[in-house]
Image (cartoon, rainbow, N blue to C red; front, side):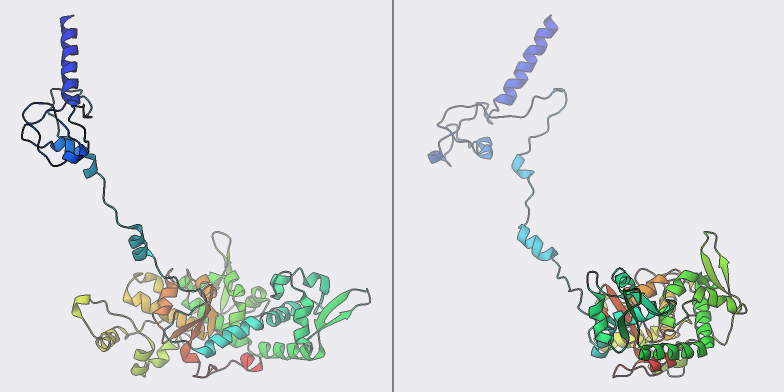
Length: 426
């Protein structure tokens, strides 16, 4: 009973101490009116706690809020920290927004310091002729080279025109190549004119005469790829770049001495190289070896240096020249190189340069290049790597569909220096 009463007295004593904080002389704090701010207390001391809490009165003693009662009186009490000292001071949000806001570049704006209009015009020309090219390819695969008009509206993706547009509007632009006629069954059909029929037959003769050249292109692709094999479907998807036949899957079976079709562990049909040909393992880059100055002008591999060196622009260029030579052959095994070394970067640049040289028009879409990412040991930074070599590659078009050009294959007017017979025909 006595112990319980003693504990209650102790609690009351603690509450009174917390509820009525004393001044340094032991008397309760006195507060003054707003007009008496700055005057001394009757005891000769200023009330630091009163100024701290910002409370002013008329000289009456009022209880000031104190900390919660200490549940463990035996432990030493820590001094009370004012709440205003715990609030962090933030900067103006407008200042933060001005620093963090980045200027976005339009999607259709080129990232090159120098824009070449002739490359941009080639991309615009292909966009205008998309319907003509796709329609010709699609109709050529049909048995009688005719298509019913009602079915053509449903095949807008295959024919290359926007959804909801009428096919007849596109056909009217090429009246000398396509014609619309009524069949004996009373339905409208689309077919080739006599002029177009003659051009298609002439093109087929040229393609048949270039069969051996297309075999060499496929072999060089396999010689550059990792493990000398790649999925059959990837080459077929990019068949327009290398002008391989439409029946490519059956066409490769005729050349058993060059490559064969095997099944991977996951069931994917792979085209595998049968025999390595050292005479074909010579890239177009090696043709520059005799002219070192031309190589140094075409490629640039930066040397990392600190900002404290404070080099001029000409000094940086001279320093980068030491990294240019020797080049790495694209027909070497790039999968064994360390991913972020200088040799690996030279290998990837050489592979892309050789890949473009094997195409008909020495250019390809960025989507076609990325499709061979695993086979050519490319990284996800392929786009940035191309921008680092503006003297060798040029990216034309828009951000969503870049077209990569090999600059050394074109002259100053935008014409191919060496044209394939099929390009001359077109």
